[in-house]
Each structure stands twice: as structure tokens, then as C-alpha cells.
Length: 313
Image 1 (cartoon, rainbow, N blue to C red):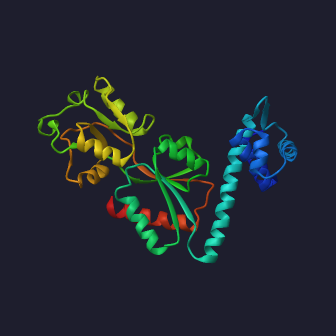
Image 2 (cartoon, helix red, strand yellow):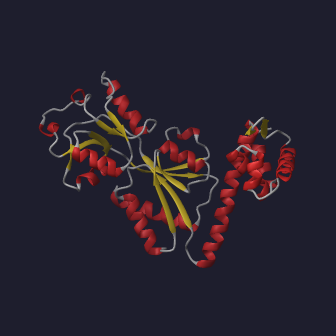
Image 3 (cartoon, rainbow, N blue to C red):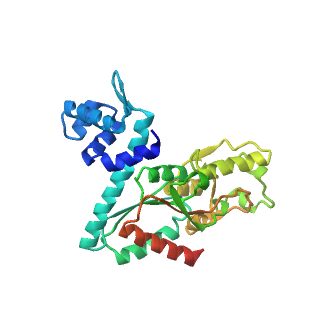
């Protein structure tokens, strides 16, 4: 059975209670615990699972000595069930929003680049028009955020799609380029050193984004292409407070987008290091799911993000 057919059956033949059981089984991997989570008896949960598997004609969960685990069919069905429940929740929210005025919840994820200017200005404008709209915003890597977007946990993402042609279920809208630079405390010994090159900072301490992030991969590649060892004295963090304090009180360096560097430099204690870094990053933009229509609140926030981006980029 193809995944397309599995998805069609998941949408057309499963009841909400059955969908909730599949989600619970995927999360707890135990029929007894899943029954408790969905407020039914264990025999009822076992029978319901058999009924669901009869609908699809394939086993969705493998029965193990100490629980259950989804089969490849189960993984496919659960993925579409999560999206269906997310769409249903958004539909209910949209109706309630139209009845009571613009309110509800918008869940947004972004890489750090748009955080100093674009995101705050867009949120401020949105809240002026819709003070009852609750906006949840978090920062992470593009890979992490896109994965959560696919699961229906986020309404949209400001980030990068590295292989857009391999993501047919996602829509990408370009916003801006990103240029990297290096910052350090303003009286850092390297600030007055002329003609700084990469070989001069190999042995320096570096504050970096976590391994697996696109910027971290580009950072490592930058040194490899120059025939140099990758710096080993590193601290991995995305915490602005940790970065600020370490930069001010140590000789650590930090590679960061120019817009974010400008934010750090407002303190007067951090400055841009006079070194050119051949660290090229792809453009970033708005990423949405193709099968998900934006709720009114999401649509409003997206409008202001586009407006602010047009003004500052």
C-alpha cells in the first residue's frame, strides 16, 4: 500500500478518538499506558487498534514483549494523523477566532538571524492590531525547526531549506541574505592586529552554534578549505546571555550574522573583529507546509513579517 493511499484512508476513515490512540501509542509505546492517556480500558484500546489496522489492511504496530513499536506503515499513518489533527485544531481555532475577534495562538520558529530586528518589529505591529493574539516564538536551527514544522508543531518557520527540491510538501519564500562576521570584546588583543587571517584565529576560543547547524558546518568547512585544523577550543550555545557574558569577560571569539553582531555591539563592550571570513550562508526565508492553510492570526503575522522585511532589507 502506497503512502498516498495510507494518507487518504487516515483522513477519510479514522475517527478522532482512533487518531488520538495512534498518537498516544506512538508517544508511550505501551497499550496499557496509551489506554490511560486516551481515557479507555486496555481491552478497548487493543480492540480499537485491531479495528484501525483492519481499515488499512496492514500492521501498524509491532507487538513486543514490553510494549509496541510502529511499523513502517505505522510511521506513515501516524505522520498523516498528526497533520490531520493539527489541521482540525487550526480549523476550530479559525472558527472561534472569527466569532470572537482576532485571537488564538501562533507558533513560530526562527533561526537567530531575524531575531534582532525583523521578528520584534513584526510582532509589535501584529500585537497592535490583535492584542489578544498569543504568539509563541522560539529560536533553534533550521533542521530542528523544519522537522517540527512537518510534525505540525509550528505554524511557520523563518529559516533555510538546504535541498528545496527534495521538500515537495514545503513552500519556501525568500526574505534576505545573511553575511557573517566575527565579534569579540572591544579591547581584545586581536582588535589592533593588522591583516588578520584565519590562521591567526585557529587557536582562539570560539563560541559557536551547536553541531549539526548550518552555520557550524560552514564554519568548519571554512577552516578545512583553508588547509587549517578546525578550532578545538569551543563552547556550543545559542543563549544570548551566555554569549554576551563570555565575550565581555574572556578572549573568546564569536562568528555571527552581521545583524546579530549589531545587536551585541549596542552594549559598547563588544566590537567587530577586523577579519574577513569566507563563510557563505544561503538566503533564509519563510517556510510553510503546503497542506496547511494559515489561520487568521498566522496570516496577520506573516503579513507584517513581509512588510518589515521589505523595509529593512
